[in-house]
Image (cartoon, rainbow, N blue to C red):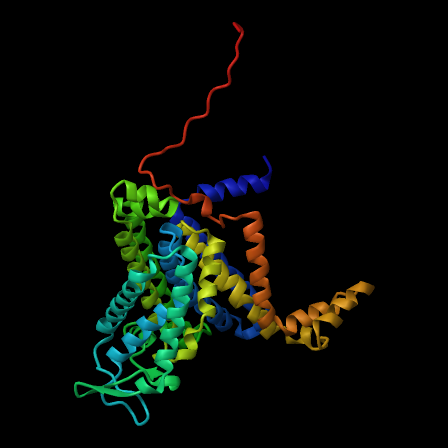
Length: 427
């Protein structure tokens, strides 16, 4: 057996928690090495900035991918309105927690604590998900997709509408802020208060090592998101391993068979859709609203594509694959390429003006212009990279990184043992 096969078998044998932990640690190490290469004397702080930003991205996309995996990977519900349900959760939290007497030009809210606002956003996202699911689940998968993406755009256009920018309901002034957005209590500000308060000695030690306080706060916030990912993973794993989860997987495999066994599949699908939407609402608040501000521009349909890309890479039907896919997409395909263009601008200094001239130089075996063009336009071309990776995954590993761990609907092992080789001396 080759060394590569041995390594692959050892990795496949790792428990899920160890696999995820090692993968994220490997990403942190890669970013640390990159910071050491380009940072010089600022390498420690640069590495902290890279790691903290990626940790926040991994935590946010993992929450979203787990939510979509429950809907699509386990239940077969094709929801491409992820951004809309994120917006519902974020805007509900913002309206509930924004101060009732804001500064001039700001939008008023109810002034409730954040620990009330965040669950309120999750509940509202679940309610909107239920209202969308009731009529939409009568449709086939492709029509359900059209309904959810249309609802997502309706939500975004609604919060952008000047008619709800600032209104008075029952003598209470509130609103969405329209196109200018709304400010509210910052989730990352809560973490900053803990870090800079009880954690002040740790901040002082980090600053002595050349790591700035804001980077330390951002890393702490990323760890909070990862803790929520762990909690969500545990809850969803218990859910999909329960009889309720087996029905969801049966619906994914063949809904008519599940119905023939006496299961009200519409009710099961609505419940699964609501739980997934609640998680999307949570991610919308903690990701897009981490700084205490949201606007309609933060909830464009592109983010739905990102979440689907992460799930396809990781493997639909696997919660562990969802987290690995989120980490791969957010760190290696989305974040790192942009940093390459930022810290190697000299490589793109002599870039041709268009891709045709860059590729034409390959005719004389000169790859320099193409490399320069790629570096100069890396922030745009990373989306081409994402597309190439998706095409490769679909062709070579259609189940994704861990899609082979897709759990069957049966509660018992239905695999049959291999028949022993026949034949013998007496035959």
